[in-house]
Length: 179
Image (tube, rainbow, N blue to C red; front, side, top):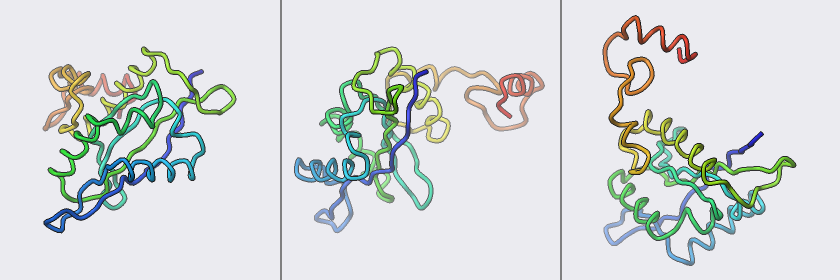
């Protein structure tokens, strides 16, 4: 069995900009401090593999904005330059809420963090997370693996629109245990 465990949320550092607004502060120094805090809460999590979610926390809810996979480790992959750019874009648009990371870490059979992740397994987990996140947030920043999720409509299953579902849609939902 392939087991994962969820860790977080971990707040990303922010600072006030010249206009007095809070913005992401993802300098090398603050990123190092971020990983120290992660390690205090869960030793070796930064070296684990799996998937991660960048979201914005508002009160008790977290809105997902980007889903990624870390086949090498979380520390090297989820705060890479191009990922930080995505997060900054989200925070510039959203402006409110706390930016957070949630880690979905792969475990070994003995419950330790796994060091390697098969490409197809990582893709499967990432795609499942993306699908669920798109239902909550159609503005998800992921580009890869979202084309069909945005465009394919299967009433009762994918891209459920307004109005009453058809009898066929109700049958599909019932058959798949979706409602």
